[in-house]
Length: 110
Length: 113
Image (tube, rainbow over all chains, first blue to last red; front, side, top):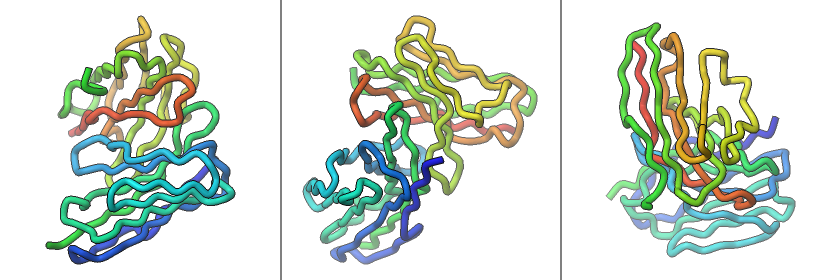
């Protein structure tokens, strides 16, 4: 069974601070996705990383895929209250289905 | 087409009743997935279809659960004889074959009382 562990589980910061959340596994994934989910809604795709060592930037968000394709990180610069939500990582296997971590709940206080 | 659509958004049912949920994927997507999410956890895989063929079912999918995708377009997920432990958010997602990422609908929140 492929497992993804996300840390920290909860993170509460002030507006303007930087933060990094992590997604770790002992398994290799063909790709990894990051999603953001708000209460009562479905996950919304932020990014897909495919190549080991890959770095992708989406405005203030920077995503990195580990060289061995087992782990990933999400760094947010100058966090804003609108960044509040549950951040989920998901590893995609060859069959297309994804294994999800339990997420990091981020709260950004104004 | 604006994305994956799920209906209903919310369902409250009494224990022992049957419920059915519908998912309309993004129109050109040939893969469709069902996941279940409980509070404080990430989505858990239930089953997926490629076109009309159901290719994999999780052991989480007991014999009270059945999913169909009769014409390779929309899908239904039925739960028979619901139990309180079935209370969860049921998420549908779709993707193109070979594409690494899936796109999710807004989910159906099921509450069994």
